[in-house]
Length: 97
Image 1 (cartoon, helix red, strand yellow):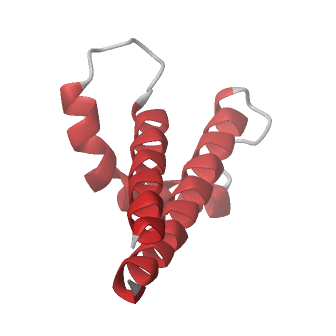
Image 2 (image 1 turned 180 degrees about the vertical axis):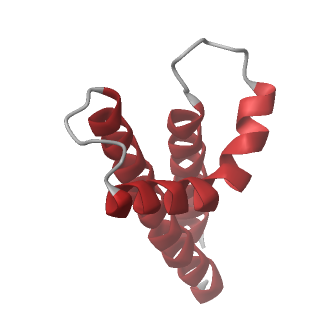
Image 3 (image 1 turned 30 degrees about the vertical axis):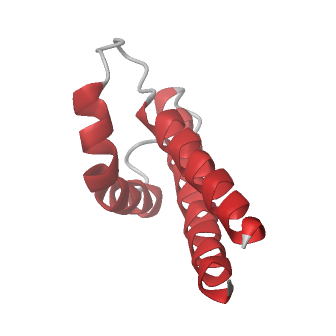
């Protein structure tokens, strides 16, 4: 069925975009945390805040469900895993028809 294949490709593209944004957010956060780059760097701070604003509505429900783990935020990892599970399910459905 061509509709499922198209849906799979769209979800795959969105998953790749979200994973890239999560990785960029993580790397910039680490650079700020370890003072490799000063948090006063206006450009990177704006990029980091923009990515946070994009991802926060998606990550907030996951954070609300997950138990508090202190300083480590596992919600991006959970989001990546959930997106991969959806991709596997859609991929299997698309190849089954």
